[in-house]
Image 1 (cartoon, rainbow, N blue to C red):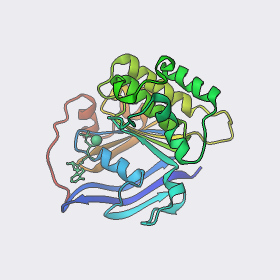
Image 2 (cartoon, rainbow, N blue to C red):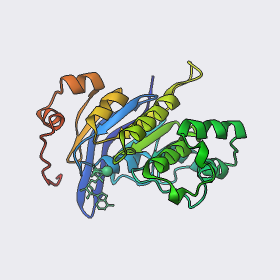
Image 3 (cartoon, protein in one colour):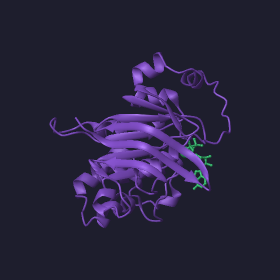
Image 4 (cartoon, rainbow, N blue to C red):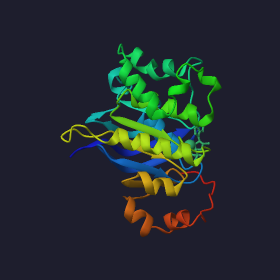
Length: 251
Ligand SMILES: Nc1ncnc2c1ncn2[C@@H]1O[C@H](COP(=O)(O)OP(=O)(O)OP(=O)(O)O)[C@@H](O)[C@H]1O
Ligand SMILES: [Mg+2]
C-alpha cells in the first residue's frame, strides 16, 4: 500500500537556523505514528509542514501522490486536521464548536449523531455551556471531537493530552482509537501522527515511532522494536529519561 506522506530532504529554516532536516520519512495510510523527541527537536515544526500551515524551506513533501505546492487546494488542506495542546475554541456553546467545521464545509450534523458525540465526550450535560467556561479536559475533548466529526484522512495531534489528568488522557486516547476503527474493512482508516512527550502514551497508541533529535530523524521503527530494542544510543538515553538536550544548530 502506498504511503500517504513522503518526505524527502525536508528542511525548515527560521532566521537562518535550520530546525528540521529529515532525509526521508514515509507515513503509511491508516497507521498511528508517534513522534517523539526532546523539547525543541522539531516535532511541532514537522506537524506544521504536514498540515500545510507552512512551506518547507527545502526538499519535497508529497501528500497522497502529489508534491505539495504553494497553491495547495483547500480540499487537500481539509483532508488533514490538527489538534493542539491548547485548544482554541470559539466563544460559543459546546455544540456550536462541535459543528463549526462541518458548517464551514456546508454540512450538518444530524441531531442523533450530535447527541451520540456529546455522550461519547461525556458532555451531554454541558451541550449549551459556553466553551470558555469548560475545564481544560472538557475543552480538549471538544477540540478533538470537532476534528473527528470532520472525518479527516489525517489527524495530527500535538501533545493533546499534556497537562491533563489520567481520566481525560484515557478519554482522549479512547476517542482516537474509536475513530481509527473502520466500519468498512476495505477502507483505509484515519492516519494518526501523534506528538507526545509521554513515552507510556506512545506505547499505548502507536504502531510506529519517529524519534527526532535536533531536527533530525534519528530513529524510525515499529513501536514494539523502538521501545524494547532501540537501535541508537540517543533513543536508548531518551527512553531512560537521560537525554540531555544540546542546543546545537544544524549545519
Ligand atoms: N516560527 C518560528 N520562528 C523561529 N524559530 C522557531 C519557530 N518555530 C519553531 N522555532 C524553533 O525551532 C525549533 C524547533 O521547535 P519546535 O516547536 O518544532 O520543537 P518541538 O519539538 O515541538 O518542542 P516542544 O516539545 O517543546 O514542543 C526550536 O528551537 C524553536 O525555537
Ligand atoms: Mg512542540
